[in-house]
Length: 401
Image (cartoon, rainbow, N blue to C red; front, side, top):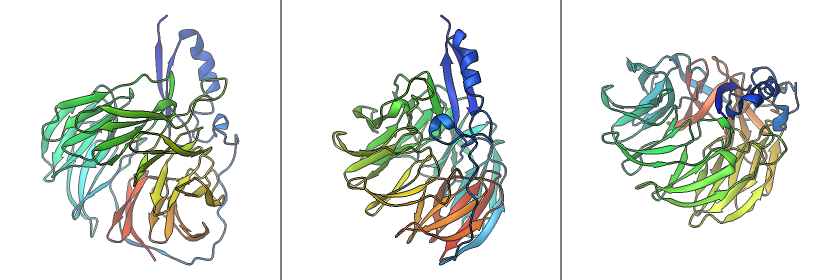
């Protein structure tokens, strides 16, 4: 039989799904996914109550305050998560229409803005005097800090994530599930990691976690792999969660976010699955807990922080997975991955609100609403504060005191 591909049905949480379906199954699956394609319906098959409304924000008694140092508009981000990066005193960011910008980190003033000529779907990432972006056609472009193109390479399909340069290698994740290691100097391919993917996968911009020359990457069907960066050799593969359920939708258990590595353990969380931690040397599981998350987790000191699929913010003991606290005040608000700043855990939501939670007990200590719609991507630490971007292309430098 001929296998057909349907791609890019977008969910309200900003994730899209790719399908490889037999012709006779195509119509039934499209009907089943009617709710997924709508931005104002919920994924009841993902454990989220259908038609659930985002939690109403209640008044808080602030014990801290966000302050805006500067704010600038760069242009709409479109459907993809385009990360900003900081190199010394310069910020590099990209827009949906293919612009790449360099800004002054102290003021937000534009230093240069160039047209790349591509639809940017992955990046921005940094290297030794260079920044990297990828396109929806598989192009990978490297620019110098002066805005001049250094090299151009091509990978197997749409670029979803480009890593920062590590040991002279840039790792590119593409939409077909492959990771390609490119020489950061000239863009030539050094290695490629390829694995079989299920018929139904979540399209995400998950990257890699790096420690001591090893990249840790999560994949569809809950797989976590340790890959040697120098030559692409797979050191081990482990299972974060096994697919469960009777339908392909119910059996989705993809790792849709970056793993995190800390000391001698690496942790990852899957959508419709579990969070699990493994020892970095052999991939043996240390502990696991049934928690589902689209957006991922953060490790800081003794704790793991994550936003689960329903919108609860959770603090776990990183040694055994025990719950320290759980805040359910922000349910269904499509939260970002938590970001630790001082004694606070910061998350953004679908309406442009930033919430600062106390790292001690999870209570909400401060809140601010930014313009430009939903907050996307991971904040970047900047001069003791943070840099935050919204879907509409508004970039903010903030402090929290």
